[in-house]
Image 1 (cartoon, one colour):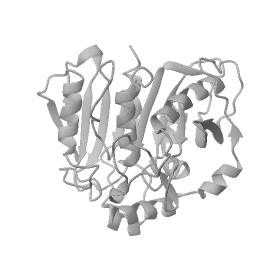
Image 2 (cartoon, helix red, strand yellow):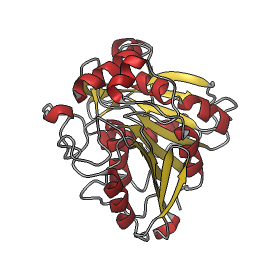
Image 3 (tube, one colour):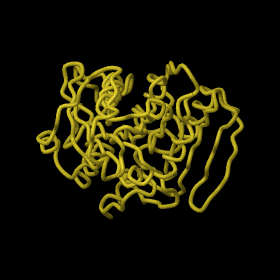
Length: 322
């Protein structure tokens, strides 16, 4: 059922196919250590391309209203779910509006493993949806995403102490991986409907983590016991991150209308681990744009109890690189 759901989400949210996205792409410079400060850039979204590891990769970049070419600006990578596209994630999460309001660049990279009308991420050591193996020669997505940050820094005026990663479902698992494998680059991560604590986790510092998950998620069940990539519960994943970050393992728990917030404090380096458990929500982006009833019948109900975009940005802004 999960594979069918991924295809449906992609079909219903896509503003264009992967082919249509590619036709409007511009070259993105891959210049390690270069700064794009001083280079003019228009606000709005543009599709860019980058060649990494012998593969042509795509990313949609949204530059916020009021962007100043000489003012260092935070950068958020926002990763799509399995079987979806960069365009899907831009519309599904609705994060452009938050970027415009709060003044950060948001980039929507695209995976490369074909899955129906969309793509999957190559999460290290994990199978694809449905237990499928990865095709031979699949691109190294940790390498792609870290090199993408450098390329964006060469084109835009990016504040290198404020680079973050979020994502949905398969993209959330990929964001979780970046917290472990690229902790010197990503100041904090925010997995939505897909928090994991990868093993091994070679993070070189305590990484701030904020996660969101519906308690009625039928795709990645809140209590675990799902597909091969989804065995343990979401609360266990949060506890594992708390232990990784050397936090107190006794969390503070508060409640709101339609959600429970669990926060692990006393972490190393001023980090924090927070989990929003959204009561009765399905496999969704909390507070995101409304989805058609045909999808909510498969993915479970949506909830506006939490505005994930605003909460994610507030958490990110409070946790730049030390």
